[in-house]
Length: 201
Image 1: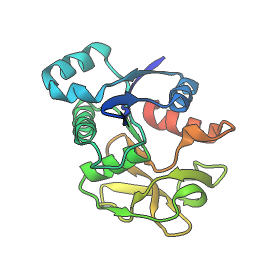
Image 2: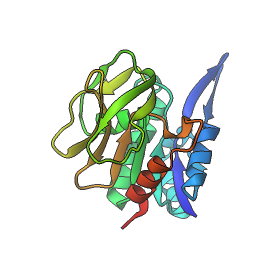
Image 3: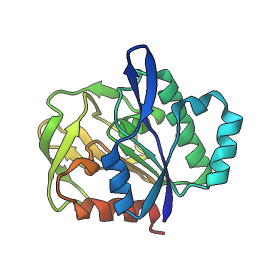
Image 4: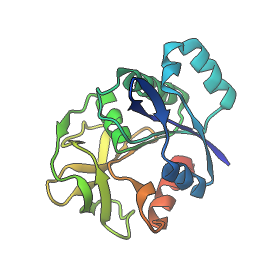
């Protein structure tokens, strides 16, 4: 099985905070024959030990999960930016889902903007024919309207032409603004595309 480093959202409960992962996403990754290693957000506080841990588990890919807006929790933002940088240096593939796609966009200095009516299902136009069903599910308040020339847009929203999926032209980096793990029925076209993108040489 492939080893996936999976980031987690931060949830506030009364006066305490905890990291949380989505079971549907872990199960989705299992369908890709991947086992998830959950990285605590507090690991960013000791980068030497974080690097040692990353070297020991020897990950095959990084998945930046959804949840939390950018800027909501600095600790998570800092960790994910550091992990993107680490994976680029090590040539480790990266998948960003929803917020994960936004943090990739932000890392490469693309502008993140407020979007409306992106909670629920909507249709997208694709440029790589990787979706059999063009209906996707989104749960985000922010999006990307324009990408720098290092990126290629592979899907955009029919309603407002905001970017729904993109790839880096030179690096193994994929961003998807919807949640492939939250469909009631398995979308094997998406599973196949993501698996091939991350692991096919």
